[in-house]
Length: 118
Length: 148
Image 1 (cartoon, helix red, strand yellow):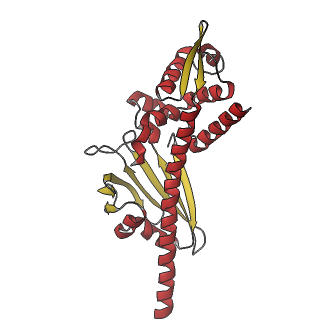
Image 2 (cartoon, rainbow over the protein chains, first blue to last red):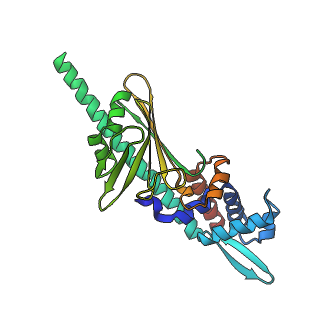
Image 3 (cartoon, rainbow over the protein chains, first blue to last red):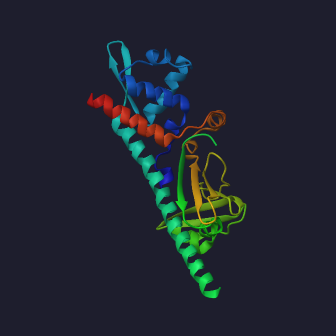
């Protein structure tokens, strides 16, 4: 089953605060943890924790520039997450389409039978 | 119902009772859901679904004909499914006139599987976002930024 494909990824994106951090990284790129902390309502420590989780999930990477550590989004990984999510949704669309076909066929069959018997 | 959810719906040209039967009768279940379904649709019923060479336990939660049907799945074998070790699938059927039904499915719980308990609790208090949309938006933004 597809659900367990990437728990780390889902749980990383699942948290609203982490999504806020991810948002800021997407729109601003190469920034430091302090810069991020200045733009969110939670603490610098919380930002660092979120960055660790995002990094562990492969969504964010860091590099050193002089004395600063800068963070950036891993585009491929983010794209992979979007695709995996779309695939889960598509799976449900296929199931719903099958239910529709089965129900509509059964309904047409019922109507035919009622006409014949009635 | 917090967190990352999949939320899809479809309009079916059949009365709600017919859609209900398609959704819940064992021989129908195996046609739309899994290769083999071993499940009685009753609240609390434990069952099993097989997909090719994979399979897993299913536990029915709500059975409210012909309006609501929900179950939990993807929990570890031998464990009772709860929020955090499983995914919740909820079907809602809404009649639109006599011969038409809107069928909606919401699957939630993906993000909770790998979370420590205290984080789950904290998270349960927070609001719910559609994350499929979120990811799409993020990916689009990112593509723009990289091309620009």
